Image 1 (tube, rainbow, N blue to C red):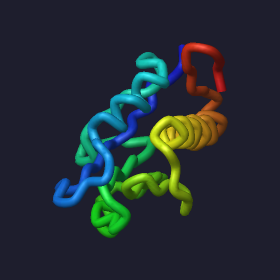
Image 2 (cartoon, rainbow, N blue to C red):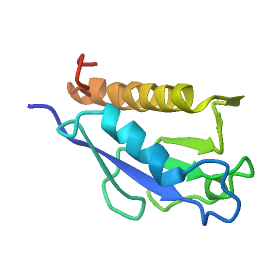
Image 3 (cartoon, helix red, strand yellow):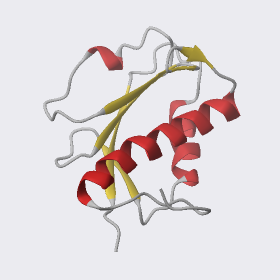
Image 4 (cartoon, rainbow, N blue to C red):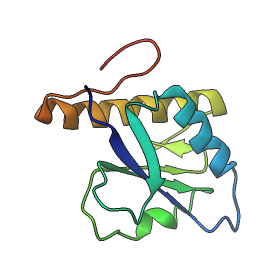
Length: 120
């Protein structure tokens, strides 16, 4: 049985959002199988990955570290991996990056991440 990876979600305060932050996380979550990935608050223990979600390109949430040292990915408005994306592409790129990061962690432990169409 595969491990359930824990992805911590850290939201900005939402003072000037260009994107609907919770809708983005929901869209990414729907693309990942729930028996492979569990989204939790960033303050939870034993995270495998941290997902910083800033509503605008200022990326205030990415400027602060959490105590637990884990790999992280950050979206700042429509910017991800130093490039601006349209909504559907943004969701796809983030989902793929989460799969890639967690697959790398799983390889270290002999585990993988699944979605509805494949196992990584």
